Image 1 (cartoon, rainbow over the protein chains, first blue to last red):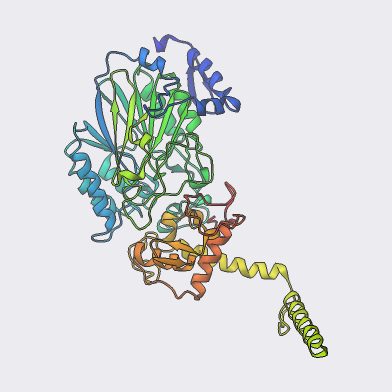
Image 2: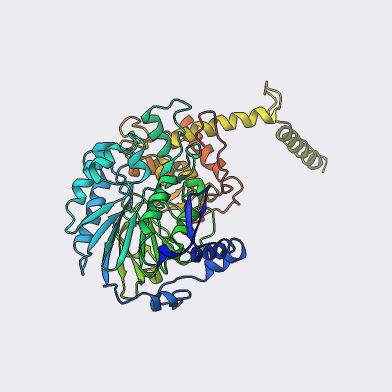
Length: 358
Length: 167
């Protein structure tokens, strides 16, 4: 069906749109100013608040083919190559927490930044702990995993940086969203200097991240034959919206990614990197942030689109405040509910404790 | 009566002299007033504080005064976020007293980063205070504030890019 529709190609972006998508894209781009504001207030909220605006069509369209399931999310361990570092214990605590979840998650997705400095020893340490999970897991890279050897060690341990799997009627995608244009060759930086720049959150000289053209091509091919009523769960290290680009709380080609995923009724985008509870919804894409197992980050100086979905003030003296694991329940109607599983439950508001609807 | 009048006049003269001294700057200063040069000196301290702020990330053990576990200030406080220079001095539970931001810096260095810490009047401590304060420039004074806050830099600007291209 999809293949029979006429297509247009936008040469600059190398993105192909069907007629249906073309209309959607035009409508979508038309949202940019006042529409964006409407989008921001029209979305998803915790069940207790009762706002399910915009999700009715999902429930109707999605289908009897989805078999409910649960998966867990871990991220941002930032392990150091230092023996008995306290981050090791918190990483392992999160692994133990997932292993004890009931019902047991079908799988675990790790959303990037296993290591801190890109050392293979850090990634090996993380893999050793992830291997203690009692269920399968998949990993995407974060910038801390990558820029010492440009992903060589990461690939040798975890395989492809872009992947997808079909599970119980849902399509799950993981992508490398931390690709940066070459900023190191010109100034002649060493590998260590390159990594040193990237690991600073405020590294403006590094430039914005994204999946870049090859990632967009991969994504387009990956979803080409996936039917629009299939629930899509999309993992990237960075958010698919311009949250706070100064800290790379953004993905430079997020608009193109959203365009490619525009045909789906419901896309649940889960990202790492921000080390905090945060949520946004743009069109058909819910975007939810995750807590780390290393340290929490302050909220950047911008208004949150959903100010109630955040964590509480944290105690710097409690090394577990603001951190933990997560699980997402996928329902028969193809919707999801993000459950934060903080190490310290009092660090998230009651409404967030009840789950964030995706 | 005359003695009392003299006393009042004398006191007034002394106060006026002090005021003149305060307004005109220290009489013993050998440097001409130069606002730009003064600001440059501040920015040198800010730049040094910035460097210290980002030291320790990923290089555990090499800077024992700052960190022995690889953590630097910027791990948790990018752009000096949530340092809240406008709120100090204040009572801080972690300190167990009314303390200064410099006290809190040492608490973070010693407890979170497992470093040795700095003397409160050291060049390093002053530089880190200069950096954190500069990054939160414009924030209204709010003694004792204990709210969760964001950094008070203008979105997308922060600290100007230096020759090394890092910020």
